[in-house]
Image (cartoon, rainbow, N blue to C red):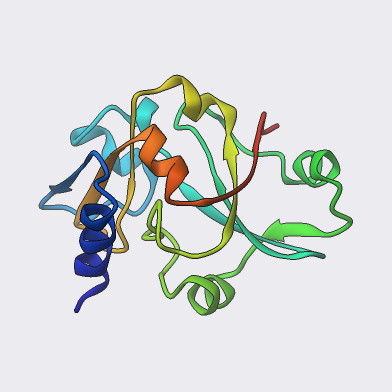
Length: 151
């Protein structure tokens, strides 16, 4: 079973309100998505490496650049940085730019702006497919550590 099929099975089995959107060009960064959906509803997934292990950081498309040092201070980490491509692949099984919104099995910090939306769009593990999911289902299918105001 492919990673995309596993994701669809997980979503269906959980009775999530979702849609898988196929597109002819890959989406590898948020800017690539404007042709297919409202990027203000995008929720890119970043993996951070901290003195306490790896976490996913899921942000709103409305958010600008992340100040990783301020974020580390806010969360109480002595060490924090974006994980490199090898760590991301090892920790999640996915390449940078294709990390799914759910199914990566890392504890998550999520941007409080996501809670203002009904649906969000994000990765599926395959750059030619996007997941549209109801925010409540996204939350219930992840290991949420905290909802935060990301600096």
